[in-house]
Length: 483
Image: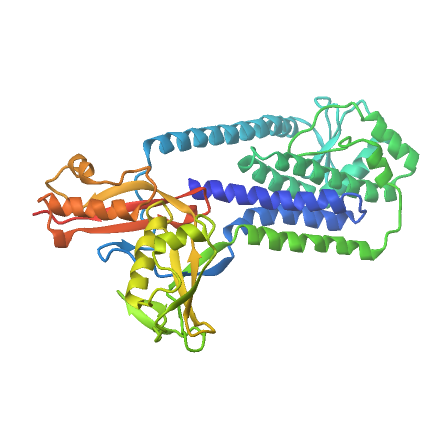
């Protein structure tokens, strides 16, 4: 359901983008056929484009964790959803389906009487359409290949109406309306779709007016026929009504005005909008790397290594001077440089020890983040030789967003009840992710005497689809082997 909801959101944004460009730049242009292509394209693109996602690459350093913990950046495990979330999602789904049923019922309620009239009324066959004179509708309109006119309308006015409605039929405007109805049915909650329907119908009238006026005996008679229909009837979903959008602007659009073909280039404004929407919904592809900068030349060197069958970039360690010079931090937004220096426990002037530095980086500093929900935190060390021969250190951080525990699952327990195992765990559903609590939970399971210590393996499964939310979601699976 979450995927479908996200699809609806993207579809609504696509439609809003096309509607916004039309309202701001195209609605006063008189290239009505071109506008029709644009508007129908907006419907089709809002249906198709949400299925496509642009991806960009993000390189993350390998996170150093307890050797017994396996963290997977992909391969999301589908687990049971919390009961509250399930109820909320079901309620939303019920409201959404109710809306769809209402729109479908409304459309059928308006359309079925038309079929009833077609079946019982006499139709006058013309070249490309059939004329039906019925007093059940005051307004004149066309429906697929049928034109409906009230018998109280005189012949001169009927001729003008037929010329107009014949254009709707000839240009097959009903196809546009059918596409719109399909999209409106699934996007009934989106106010933009209702506005979009008005825009499409209005452009249909401009198109029909243009060609009908070419066959009209008198422009004044044609406009008079429109005014006579001003207060006739209501709109039916899948029809083109002669009196739709009858206002000053429609009369102005009937005037023959020469426009420069260059104005057609306004349509190109939609291309940066398309690129912007694709960019807005782009998603990252993560590649995990570990980095080290050579102190001798200040450059980063890499080679490929395989860990558990997965290839990673790694960098060799270089010989370093014996005294630490300056210490700098990059990309730190959560903690200040002073707080990070205190946590690192190493200061300028100390003797350089690669082993101690690595322990503090992947120990105390990493714990500062990993114990407070920053699941994807990583730290990269960049070393360079200072002017006085000291070892200057730059620590480049990737903090990322915080993650909360969504579900905890135990696999391999046949005898020990789930509730008893949960009491042994320090980490609970709803907690911020904590490497310390995860390790404590593993130790508690080992010391319980119920499981083989060598058979206990925690698995961390972050849901990358939630990483841009305020709190990302991560599932934990504890694989155990009972004694």
